[in-house]
Structures are given as structure tokens and as C-alpha cells.
Image (tube, rainbow, N blue to C red; front, side, top):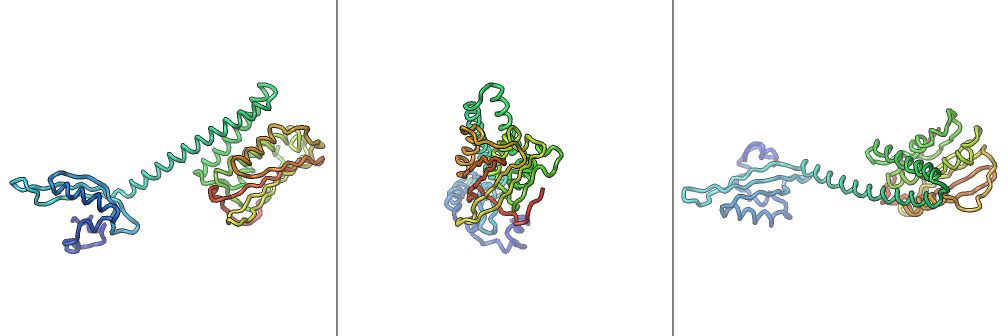
Length: 305
């Protein structure tokens, strides 16, 4: 064994390795397979394989070539083995595989969401132009959520930052127009994208009929984390409008209301309640933050506008 091999095994002198059984260097799960390949080499046929070492913690992976060496009569008298550590290569290969699987999952989910949005928008649109405007806005909000998530490496979004960026066009150079208050919560992608689209829908309706349609109108958004029996609990978010024109309850459920209910109910198993009080619309969202969403509480400090 050369000096590099000795170092990998934590040894300094070749005498420390002489006499050791080759298969003892290999993890137990790989030994049956390697035994067959070793016998193949002893029979005069080269063999190549990968194995995990039993000498290291954490485990290391090696690729090995066994080459039989013959005497003048063609009898195998010894085997030369050349090993190269490929642990990082294997890890990179596994990360790539997981990334491809995750990408495939996200693309399928996104296509399903887009199809659903198109169907819901078309069913409630009175004209092609109406359909175009509504659909463009909804897809754009979805795109904005993806853009923000991509900036974080899809590690989730701080709720305050997401809301601030989404609602910035509605401020009209008036910082007091939108008031955001709540505990610092980091939402994973599975929750962030639907919440982003729901808030977009509320903002569009406020710009058409509610607080954002008047210069003095304001929107208050508050949220909190509600602990639950599963240690994940719920996100409770409340959207409240003031200073807009008087509100009258709608005679039928609009497409925005349906989208909000379906987005939360179907995608997140959450709840949404809309109240049309004369002083302004109020919407309360309640979304479970279960293991599959991997939500994180980042602290309990108050976020400020």
C-alpha cells in the first residue's frame, strides 16, 4: 500500500496493514458482492467496482480496479488493486438526482396549478380582455413567488419580506398605506407560493373596489404562529381594509373568492374566511404548518413596516 492509502486508513507504516484481510476493509453490506469480484480476479479476469470502506466514520466510497498478475505459466500469483476515493463524486451524484426529482415534482405541481388557475379564471371572465388581465396578474404573482424563492435557493421566504415585496406597487409612495405586523416566520416553498397568490388576489380586489382604490385607504396585515399538538401548529394571517368606499356584501361568490378558497383548501388544507363589513373587507387565513411543509419559526420579534 502506498503512502496515500496508508493516510486514508490512518496509518503511517506499511507494516500496519500487512496481514490484514482485504474484505475486512469493506463494509458488511458490500462484502458478498466484492467477494464474487475478488474470486473473479483470482480466476484471471480483471474486475472493477465501487465499495464503502469500513475504516471510516463517516463512511467513504472508493472505486477499485483489481488486475490479476500471472507468472510465466499463466497462473495468477497475485492481484494488484488500485483504489480512488470518490465520496464527493457520489455525494454530488446523489444531490443531482435529488435536484432532478425535486425539479420534476415542482414542474408538475406548477403546471397543475396553472391549469387550475386558467380554468377558474375562464369560468368567471365576462370577456377575453377580462380573462387576459386576471390570468396575467395571477400568473405574475406566481412568478414573483418563484423568483423570490429562487433567490433563496428554494430554502423558503420570510413572510414579512414576501408581503412587502408583493405589495410594494400598492404603496404609492406612502409608507403608512400598508401596515405589516407579526412574528418572524419563514415559510417553505409549499406554503409561500399559495399565500403569495392569495394576497395578490386580495390586493387586486382592494385596488378595484376597496382600500387601495382611495387615496386614504389603508391595509393592515397581521399574523401569528399558533402552536399545535404536532409541534408545527398553524399560521393565522388577517387582512383588514379601512378608508375605502363603503362595502356591500356580494350577491354571489366571485372568482377571487373561489380562487382563495381553493388555493388554501386544496393545496394547503387550510381555511379562509371573508367578511364584507361596511368599513372594509376582512380576510382571515389559517394554514397548517405540518412536517411536509417544513415551516420554521425564526423568532418572536415584531416586524415593522
